[in-house]
Length: 275
Image 1 (cartoon, one colour):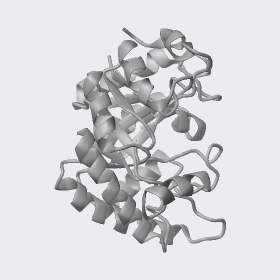
Image 2 (image 1 turned 180 degrees about the vertical axis):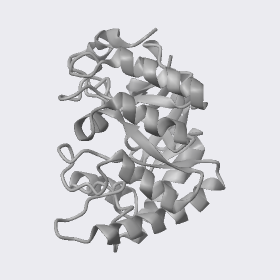
Image 3 (image 1 turned 90 degrees about the vertical axis):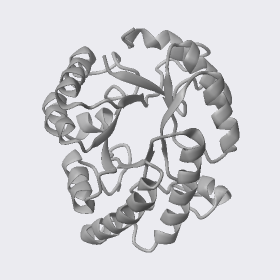
Image 4 (image 1 turned 60 degrees about the vertical axis):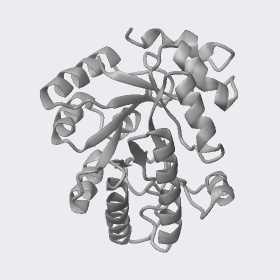
């Protein structure tokens, strides 16, 4: 059965962030992911992971800015990444270097480089060129630390204007970069909205070796599996089968908002989780 990681930015919303590590461990998770670590000292996060026997498997680069304060400001002001945005290369590099420092401290093997928004009327090819150049630079830096760099296509309903929406677009960019440590983040919530036909999509892309991580949430409301339209037992079985055939051994991040956000609601909502 696939391995699942709790997304601490979204799960356990009734608890302060630093208390969510223990809650996830008590629910049986062996790994966690989250959006951003930058509001906390890396040593504090590393201590929480160690104390609860957890592995950090993913987090994002800053969505914008040049240092810690502006990282948070960029997100609250609507920035959703800089990797593809012409003119923001300095922000991307500053954020990525900070992300690598945290990744080393947390023993995290992969970092999601947030692609960013494309304003209406701007040239998609210019964004592609910027993204490819930034990823080539980032891949070389990350390779020295044994870290994978991921990009994530996101559906335009959740994030209007996001530069990448489709899995084939993400794989085209990864192939253009040509670095073995640059991969695509396959979020099945976004895939179901944009593509549908998840079984075929998994069978098409997982064997390529270019899928670095899965994330899940049910459609349409981004709650836990079993609350929407996707047949999750079939999807997990498909991932298991294709993983066995192709040698994929990654993680599935549970990036969903619990339908029950009251105290204990996240834990009660884990009936879907294969034990």
